[in-house]
Length: 355
Image 1 (cartoon, rainbow, N blue to C red):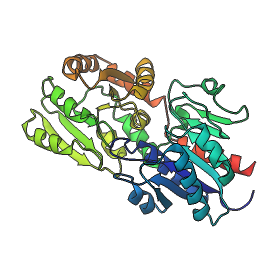
Image 2 (spheres, rainbow, N blue to C red; image 1 turned 135 degrees about the horizontal axis):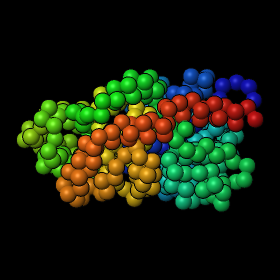
Image 3 (tube, rainbow, N blue to C red; image 1 turned 45 degrees about the vertical axis):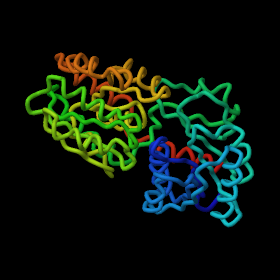
């Protein structure tokens, strides 16, 4: 095939769903555009849909209704693609959505030349030509019964979709971790923070013996419903704090931190790229496999769910204070991903386009 690759991406964001699906698609969209591709997003409307972020990045956008069944979604998505590409369809459609499976994909087949999916769960069938699962502990064999035999499988954290600034900060971030001590702690539990996990972490930290010069950086997304409660809590905490909201470049704050409290979603791979040891809070059942894999790899310690943090957090911080523990965790984290995954995935999609 000749000409630029025409790519459509189907992903959603919102206060409960969070921003991770759209944000990683934006990362891949940027890598594809560097290779000459044209990208158009199809997303459901409603609060927190991130449409302004998509258009600010220079991509096309169609907003669907915000209460569609999968069957309705398929019909509306097909119409959106026909309008976006002048009736010609697209070369590649990528869907990153837990609620849209093989039936939706089959319905969209006539609207695209190739079809791909971004998945984290390996729990349902997909009718696609390419599948990406960037998670630690997954293997291509997990999809043997879930994909067409000829489908390309990009599985593992070497394909993690990270923005270029993480790879750019990697060397400096790793170099500063040799001492093994810690002062700066970063708390970031996702863009939406729907379960008040950040508030619970801060309340638990207030009862922990932290270094006297500790600085706790709290990062909240623009969709975080917990922001008023956290603003009310911060002045009374017994340690220095700073609050960052809707951070455009997370690589800097992560590279400056010595340890982080976070979840095992997409942000876990950002921390790994920078060699940042993590304490992981499980905020949803689909985060348990990733949490267990990172814990087993020595890159993080699991704190379990958001309830009971006051009992578990002090013991975890004592483990981090053991001699050599932080440098070892940093090295284990850095070995998981190098930050070049978006380029690898973009190149694989171009190869598929040219086949």
